[in-house]
Image (cartoon, rainbow, N blue to C red; front, side, top):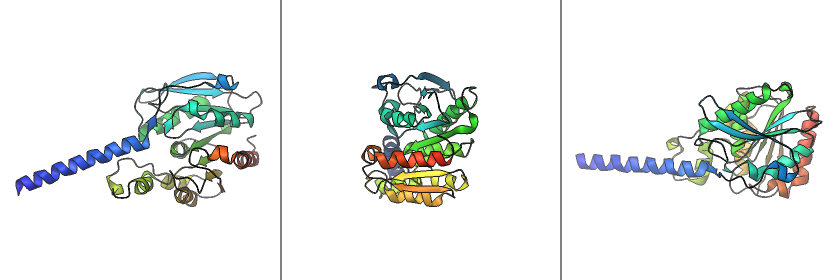
Length: 268
């Protein structure tokens, strides 16, 4: 009997280790090599390094528009790094915005290892950096979060004052994503929470959501669940294309939706 109990315990430990491994390879897919810089897209930029409260050095790029009415904090998805988002950065800049994009810890030139708590710390230090710059209007800072970036943007909104939020192809919680990707693994085994649906219930600033029914990585039902949990004012726009190319496939709808939303807030 004792041997049987020990065997069950060992199997359980092995299973938990496997679940942790699946979490680590599913949630974060960082790349360290920066394939390009904003300058290669014709944008002048400041190469910024920030130190978080837990002593991680975070890298970001700040593109200042000469006639900017507001400043956007850009939080990207779980794969690659900020160099892979330059097409979107250029689109936002061309709307007449200051754009500040960061790499989470463990991504690009940022130090450390990515984690749920870590990306929240990274988002806070990015906001705090902008908020004390004399050339940035503190009352005109807002955030755009794509996929995993939506998690960071929503958490930041519970800790700092943002004017508005744009959430693109994000999800309700890590547990809901876990049920989608690994339906046979009970969600309570997951260490990662990322409970955006719970956090967004307290966020009353204007919110714009994008999601595509063709998204095969983050199902639109999870985007809708997040939207439904959010209090007004809010708007949901369906796009076309997959998880990583909805911006390109639905570029006109995407840009027009953002332009109208920001104009209504007096941010462009």
